[in-house]
Image (tube, rainbow, N blue to C red; front, side):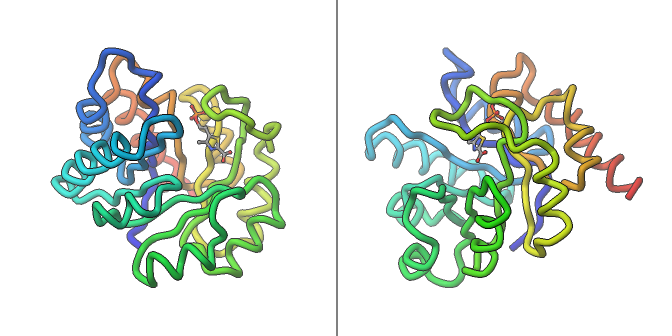
Length: 211
Ligand code: 3NM
């Protein structure tokens, strides 16, 4: 898969009154290079409509588009991939449905899950929640940057750090060995979405030069 560094997940509760597509376009223009639609509450029809609009947007900018959980929606709009949690369809069954060419990402919260995801053929894994977050219900306790260090030392597929990442703590995440970061609230809840993404992009670029 095409590599990425700044991953934005949708979270409409963080931008009341603002259009989803407008917010995500600002994020992409600020440097977001992969987008995930994550919607745990809307009807399948509404998720499909949002996915269609995001597919069009991401295609326009050449940015990969991932759908969380809804494999049928992902296939219907020809998304680039799907993202699955530990309680969603197992990777092997999902792979049978989407075929060899779609990206499959898996959320992991401990090294055993990371090892399993890699062994089963995940294209990337999520590593988190690094810090406390209110963006995910039933979230496990923060895994801290120690989990990033563990994954960086052992896992060879791309991994992205997630959960409570903010401008003020992102340096800790990068220092622990992550080179890809994923956020909901700090990006889509920002007063100036593009400006925040530009700041993250600059930090990531600076970090790349340092390592
Ligand atoms: N997955 P925010 S943490 C969607 O640990 C999600 O797998 C997590 O939102 C995981 O950037 C999380 O607002 C929420 O903290 C991320």
